[in-house]
Image (cartoon, rainbow, N blue to C red):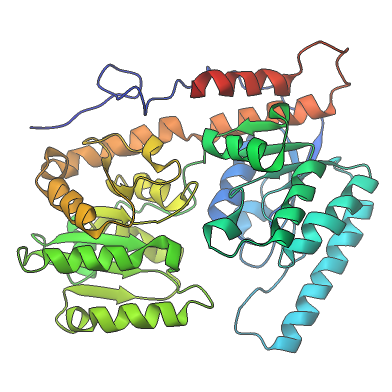
Length: 443
C-alpha cells in the first residue's frame, strides 16, 4: 500500500507536525550584522547568508578558504572576509600555531573597526575556552550585541569529555550572549536548567535544509551503477564523521545479524574519521574485514566532497543514524534533501523529525537487535516499495518544515528586537513573545 502524508493534514502524526508561522517577510532593513562562522559548516553558513541577504540585511561573513566561493563573494549585500584562510589539517605544528595566532589577531582587529553592531556567532573558533570568555568580554566591551547559535548545548557532555572548566566557560558565554538560538525545545530546556539562561533570551528556530549541495537530477539507478551496486540490492547508508557517539558499532552489529538471512543487503559507510578516534575505528575494522573483502560492506573513510555526496544519497535506499547521544543532526536533513528515508535512534530530538512509515522509522538507541528489526521493517514497508514516488514527498515535507525563509524571518525578528530601544517595564518584548510561542508549541 502506498503511503502518503501531508504537512498540515490529518495523515500527519500530531507529535511530529509543526504549525508553520505565516510568512510576512520584513521590509529591507537598515542594519548590518557580522556572521562569525568559525571557518566551517558550509551548508549552514551559505543557507543563512543567502536567506538573510535576500531580505535586505547587510552581512559581514567572517570565514575561511573552505567557505570562500563566488556565490558568497559576489552576493549583493554580503562582504566576505576570509580572515581564517587555510584550515588544512595536514599542516605542521608550527605552521598551525602561526596560522591560528594570525587569525585571532585579524579577528580582534576586525572587531575593533567593524561597523556591524550585531555579532552573530555561528561557531566558536579553535580555542573555545578563549572564545567563550576573553573574546566574548572583548566583544561586549566594544559595545557589540552578541547573538549565539548553540548547535550543541554541551558537546563535551555528549562526547563523554565534560569537565568543570568546560561547564564554567559555557556558562560564561551563555550568560554574556544577548540572545541564543537553538534548534529544539529540548535544547532550550537544557539551556535554562543547566546554565540558568532566561527563557526570554532563547529562541527555537528550525535547522535549515541543506541546499548547498547540488542536485544534478541523477537517477537512483545511475547512482547505484556509479557505486558498483545492482539495482535489486537493498542499500543501507551511514554518512558523516565517524566517532563513538555516532554509533557505527551498533549498526555493524545489526548488519551482522541480518547478513545470514538477507543476501541482498549492502552497507555503505562514508565519511571522515574524527581525529583521535583511530583506536575506536581499528576495532570496528577488525569486525568488518570479512564483509569488506566480500563486498557486503563498502567503505570510504575519508572526506566526501560536495560534488560526490549526491551519488551516495541517490544510490542508497535508506539512511541510518545509529547515534547514542545527540541534540540534532544535519545529516538527517541532508538525507531529506534527496528524499531519502531515515532510520534514527530515538535520542535527542530526532523523533520530532521522523513521521513513522512516511519518512522513516525509529529504533531504541544502543540496541543492535532493535536496529536490525527496524531495517527489516523498513524493507518490508510500503515506504520502501514506493520509494521512487515517496522521495518527492519527503523532500517537500522537509522543505516546508525547515525552510530558510522561516529561519531568516525568526532571526531578523530577533535582530530587530535587540536593536530596538528597551520597552517600558512590564511591556512584552519581541523576544519574550517568541519565547512564549515556543512554550505553547512544546506543551
